[in-house]
Length: 344
Image 1: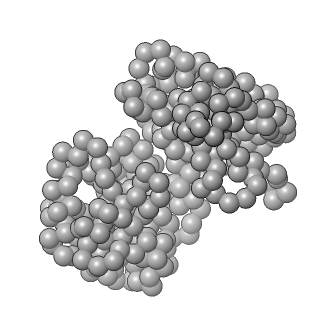
Image 2: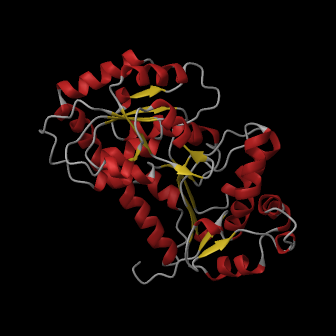
């Protein structure tokens, strides 16, 4: 798709640069400078998007939703956010469902009327990829929903086996923290890790509502480096990351990673790559458990990477299937993608 013309409909287009980013907005309220952007976005679920966005959807050969945890409604707060930013987009994609694909994301939980509304729209989408078993179970009645690894997992499977697996790992592990709701003993774990002085504290996210800098500065003993800078270091080190994509980006870079998971997506991703033993519940994990896993990796790094190698062929097979689905949409095939996958 080197010659493809992309348009990105974003809930906050100003965060990006380029004419290809279009602000998600409704037909009427967004024209007023007195109405906050987020308030105006809530109206899109009822009023629909502006004419510019409708025309883009009409003219597109392919409509793609990126991965994320955007569709959820288990309580009032997430439901309102989901409605304002993403339910209207789902309705628009469903209108052109024959050429729409939802890439791997976690969907749910939902309750009552909102769940039924989301299920009706998902059923109109050509293919809906979910990255964890709970999402698949919640929408088992929707024929277009299928299980597919996280996009970062697909990227990991494309990578050759790290050339430095036989290189001794540094004794200076890295930890990535983030704020958590309903933390239970999570902050006790972080305080214990901070007092141990054995970790470098690094930053995976610093934008918008996902700013880990204040917490990381409090826990660390020096100015935290971005993970991109840490992963550029010559010697690989063990990474302990609360953020899933901090863990996955570490694995892609050849750094063994333990994930402190707080959502279903973490367990799904680590199951897909064969690292079930190296994911802990962030809210209940202890430093002793983390230390035990680090010692297991240090004792036999090759065994750690071999777990991933055994899953790569399976992951690449699912990615090839996804690429075939995308090609069939662009080429105008009306074959049911889900039925084809089940029969293969």
